Length: 124
Ligand SMILES: [Zn+2]
View 1 (cartoon, rainbow, N blue to C red):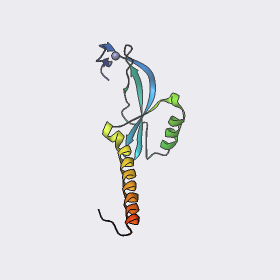
View 2 (view 1 turned 60 degrees about the horizontal axis):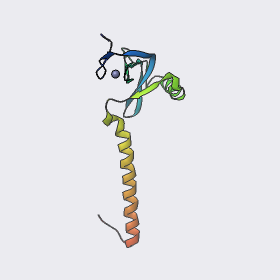
View 3 (view 1 turned 180 degrees about the vertical axis):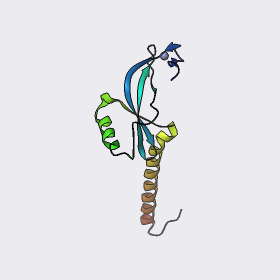
View 4 (view 1 turned 120 degrees about the vertical axis):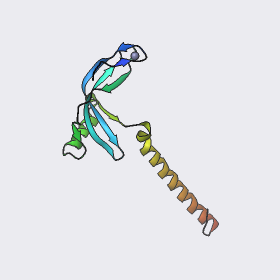
């Protein structure tokens, strides 16, 4: 980082609140990589953000100790394992998939209930 981050709302230099925060990079299949970062905040408005990542992840999903590190971060809130996605669309993809699955199951059971009620094959 070339300069201290500035809060656009407050026009004030931000401050590091905690060094050595774990940033968990999420992918479509789940947690993909764990990065070391710093938690920053604006001393005026309190907005918090992660900045100052290492060149490479501390650990990636295919490495042997990835799952145990992830478990430790989930168990101990003081380690601040912060999950992040590339966009809100990526973040909500599993929710949309789950909703689609529920809708599909509901539609199927509704169809078969109609078929039973009509006592014949029902076509839509
Ligand atoms: Zn601010």
